[in-house]
Amino acid sequence: MLVGLLHSLEIAIGATCLGLMIGTAGAFGKLYGGPVTRDLLAVYTTVVRAVPELVLILLLYYAGTDLINQVLTAMGYSRVDISGLAAGIFVLGFVQGAYSTEVIRGAILAIPQGQIEAARAYGMSPGLMLRRITIPAMLPFAIPGLANLWLIATKDTALLAVVGFNELTLATRQAAGVTKAYLLFFLAAGTLYLAVSLLSNLNIGRIEAWSRRGMPSVNEAR
Amino acid sequence: MTGEAAAINVAARASLWLQPHRIVLILMALALVFCAAFFMRWDWLPQYWEMGLMGIWRALWILAVTCALGFALAVPLGLAQAGGPFWFSVPAKIFCTIIRGTPLLLQLWLLYYGLGSLFPQYPWIRESWMWPYLRQAWPYAVVALTLSFAGYEGEVMRGAFAGVPKGQLEAARAFGMSRWKIFRRIWLPQAFYRALPTLTGETVLQLKSTPLVATISVIDIFAVSSKVRQDTYLTYEPLLLLALIYMTITGILVFVFSRIEARIPVKIG
Image (cartoon, rainbow over all chains, first blue to last red; front, top):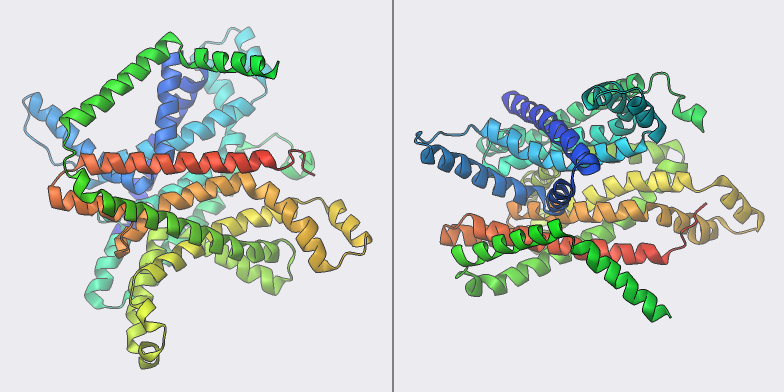
């Protein structure tokens, strides 16, 4: 079960990182991209957010592994077995990407327009502006949403049990099936998930305080 | 005059949709759909569509029941956390934290496999009137989904109850309303308006968690598609159709809720 927990955490971390990358790129595409990019991204976020994660996971899990194998055979390589870990990270990252696109887009829109204009007026290149102004300025707005996404990611790893990936929930079920002590094992797994959530909550509070440094605190602002 | 304005409005909207790049994209999408329709196998459809309708109906039914029950549970949960004494608010808080901290799949399996394996050990349960129900899977599905919805929505309702301006409640008290009347006429409606946008999101989330019940052998639309996949050895077609069905339901839900939201007074507080 601890190995399962480790797998779950690996997938959650990987998926969140991938999702953040997709999300940042997607948000910029949606805000500054051309009309075609914008429409395509709108389709992506709408579709992914409207279809249940379970269905998406099944679809992407089979379609993704199948596609890669077909491409590989077409290029003359032999078929590879895609590890469940990589596939899981890819699938959940794809799903998380859609959600974080929306979160980050909202956060960027919440930055006072003057800051970005000032950066442009200073003649900053887009890359520099992204690194120095946009990302630090949007973080306080984005962190609560992204923290939610992280918690969702840890819980979505449980869905990978359905495609047979050996993470915490499936490991628990197998252990419970062998020993017939269903209640005990499921309660233990629940405690583990809960511990992960509570620990992350603590850390998130710290990160949020760090990202808001120098800003008036929420209580004072009111 | 209004007809003219409406016509202009429609024309403007149509021109928005008919920008050149959109036309190309729409044509590409249509081409994809046609490819899917012609090159994939759909001959299993007539055989299964009755079962599929049953599945959709069952999924919607579970969604409606669990949302209604969950909301009914969430109101006291939110109220206890927002303004209750600590022996109410602490258990409510713990409940919400536990529900929101563990995966729904785990909760579902805990109830179905865990409790479900516990019940048959007690003869008095086996002999009671509840036994025919407890042997089936759907009560566990309904209970798990209801509790999960109540956990998430309870947190939302806590914020909504706490967000109602104090002056409103004080004014109601000054009018000499009884506590129950204040709750019914002032506190609950205002909190409900505040929670409505989040309620839409929660309901869509709830819809997206209904396929999980298929893992404990409730035949909803997801289970039907799995059965089709097992019977016909097709991977993509049932899943694509399934995704389309869920998207349609989500669209309808969002549309209905936006109509409800448009009806309530915009200015709050």
